[in-house]
Image (cartoon, rainbow, N blue to C red; front, side):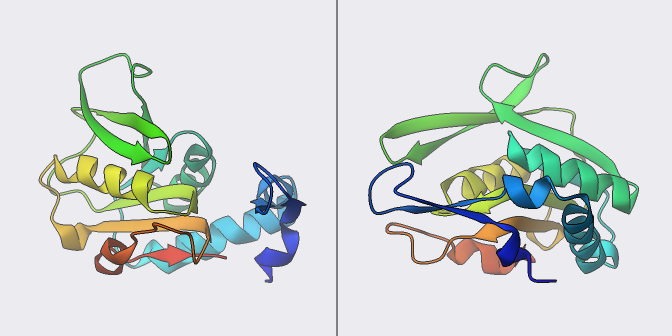
Length: 172
């Protein structure tokens, strides 16, 4: 399926010169979203995934659906202060500052095979921070996989080299 054709392109958002690729039109079409979830699940089915980690907030959407399709648990990775129990935290750089994501300290085991999901990868900052958080559980690198609905190429300052080691997959 041509998933790219189900994105809405918005010129000059969030600033002039940017063409924003809106995934909400893909998500709102049940047939297309279902096909996307099934394609991601099939890509990872033979890998023995035991937990799917969804990055706040739109990573929850893909993550929950893929976890359901694979019959495994979903682990939310949230912005700082949103989880109610003991957490591990990871700060990361943004274009104009920093942010922090967290995960419950009992969310994963070193024996888990983990699929980290998010909607979009652009510079790689959030993805790298999520990977660093999962590594705090002593999950071996070969048991960590990463998936995105959309990979935006040619982003200034992007650092995505780390993805090659982690079964990286993107639908678009």
